Length: 156
Image (cartoon, rainbow, N blue to C red; front, side):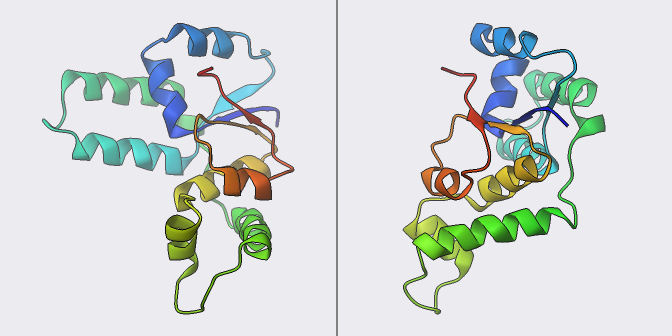
């Protein structure tokens, strides 16, 4: 499969039809895909649930946009994704080992390395499907480990 996997921070600008993102999306070759994964959809849904007031017209419009453009072909975390996740985690820990076994891997990623566990899973999905990871996040520790994943940013 050829194409892009959008991080959460790219979906809203596309929804709002920001010129840069719209131009980049329209420039994607017709035989390439622009996808999201179920983790991205979960992050968006959590944002909707935490928004005050809940369920505004904007959220309703965003949900329609997601249904029309992404939900039916969202990539799932599969049993095979675990291999890419484990590979990236191993690469990270090889360079940045846990200081003690008393700290969990997730705590070490978040507290010590500033890496988001959801980002690691999303990049793992991109790696599994050989997609270009489209994000505005720095996620340097993950990028360093995912040297075999191409990254792009449609917001610059």
